[in-house]
Amino acid sequence: MSTPPPTDDTVAGIRARVAAWRAAGERVGFVPTMGALHAGHLALVRTARRSAERVVVSVFVNPTQFAPTEDFSAYPRDLAGDLSKLASVEADAVFAPTTTEMYPQGFATQVSVGGPAIGLETDFRPHFFAGVATVVAKLLIAVGPDVAVFGEKDFQQFLVVRRLVADLRLPVEVVGHPIEREADGLALSSRNAYLSPEERATAPEIYAALTEAALAIRSGTDAQAALSAARGRLAASGFVVDYVELRNAEDLSPAETPPHGPLRLLAAARLGRTRLIDNIPL
Ligand code: PAF
Image (cartoon, rainbow, N blue to C red; front, side, top):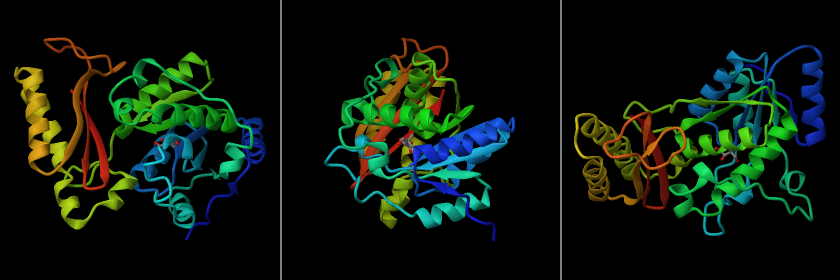
């Protein structure tokens, strides 16, 4: 069994480690996570490795992106399990700060992104992107990577981070990694662990409904009719639908009629107490 990667829990620690690699001329890749790692995260590590000699993974369940009513305290945490998974893909270091290291007494700064952060997730989780943008800015500044890899399951998050990095001119390349799926189409997510066996059997409907809508739109069906059929299909399977929308893939602005250019179909729906999101290119 390979040895777990070394773990730093302070910004000073990870900075010193990365500085030493950089001094040796090595490129550094970075994968930010909230832990509870699955095969999707490990794929992000492999992608980072393709363009960097060293890969840092952060494990930090960020309180500021959860509303008081959400699952912050229940969010799955298993640092020991995460470290052994990261050993299997030969991550070079883990940054696992404490909450006080990230948000010390008196912390009063928030990064707020407009543009792609407006609408969709924000309509249902208004706190979410300020929390994500603030922590991602802090993580990128702490680690100082050449390249950072984000999963496209959180497609809106990926665009928000890309906007943030461009606007603040952070010297890092942001790379998106396509969604990893189970054999039945369900997008890999740490939150899938919350699903009961019955819900798990229903969950792939979200990808099926998106695929069906994409096919219909591609073959000329009116986009609004296809979206409403997808919402109906999900509701009939027991989901409470937050949204199923067709957007321009570059900035998430509403797709024109008839739709053209690179597009993305995005959905969020709740199954019991679990909120699932998914998206596909069109
Ligand atoms: O996608 C996630 O796991 C989180 O939103 C991120 C990017 C690690 C920030 O906490």
